[in-house]
Length: 124
Image (cartoon, rainbow, N blue to C red; front, side):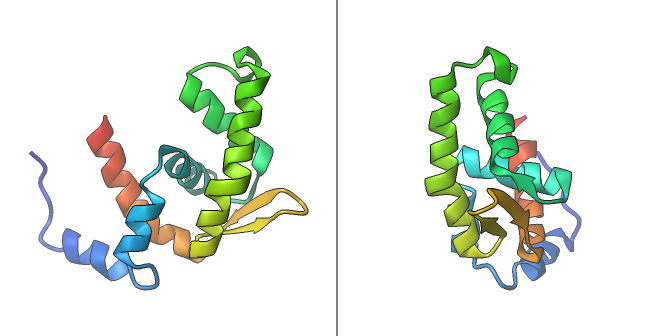
């Protein structure tokens, strides 16, 4: 059982001003996107696609990047590059500079934080 302050629900709703709930739920529907969002919020700065890929692969495999087969690393890289990062960029929560392979959080990303915190609390 969770306890909420009376304003907690309205606080979450008020932070969702430029992103619709459907968009937020769609973005959070895949664990790789959740991992990318969490990493960007944790680091609070732009990260390279390679850095994101390495951390996502290590999280998924629960091993150091040096212990993970190269094919798996390539697969995650392609998935992030072609599917997940563009979806996040389309929603406006990140800026993806493809030429520099850099993913930068935007102000809209902060709207996702309360949802990520709730999901994290449920999954632990």
